[in-house]
Length: 313
Image 1: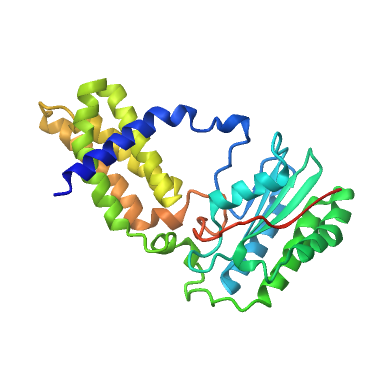
Image 2: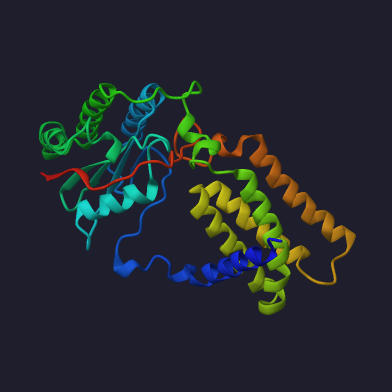
């Protein structure tokens, strides 16, 4: 009944796999980095203790108020201005709860000597543009002029937290980590549907890719395409990596028409079983992130429409 839809989706996966090497061209724009934690420093400026202190501040805010604030330090945003880059990052990461959209992004372009506070639409009332500009001028700029980046960011987060605390936001879930839960990372998203779709999809497309491109290339295309599709749907590198690995192994081991020896199948089954145990046993929240809390992900909700302010020092 749904076979035609499955075939169309699998053809799309193969096309995505072919396009992947060029996916980040974006006319020379800086690629959006992976969201690996509440503090991402690509400049090597913050010490381990500075980063840990900032992460504690941000995690406490999320656990008590539900809102997500992420700090990103990059060397430069060139050739893009910092406002455009911040908006692109914010709408890619979608930080904030999916049903609230309470996210804030603080970006520092160190070599450009520019910074920006990008505010999701749901928090523009709590942090209007003039308030974001005041935080930049009063908290960040004086500290940055003294090369005290950690202090400037700490003071900015303190002021942002105070403003968020005064906003009438829904209380966070009792677990204190609702934004990290896979079941809530997408509004109305059904993980079972994704698993079933990928399972049957790879069963159909795996042998086809193998017969057209050969065992090695067909497996790589399937693994890359399925992994990319899973990442687009879930925004999780862990889930995307697992889905891509499963597709790769299936195409290499079970994708042939003649089958394999029982011993070979046994090895493939063990590999698949090992991954399943990792996900089912808490692989999502147990690691794969630089965050000391043991896992970090977007809440999937922030809609960034350009609110906030920029500054320099």
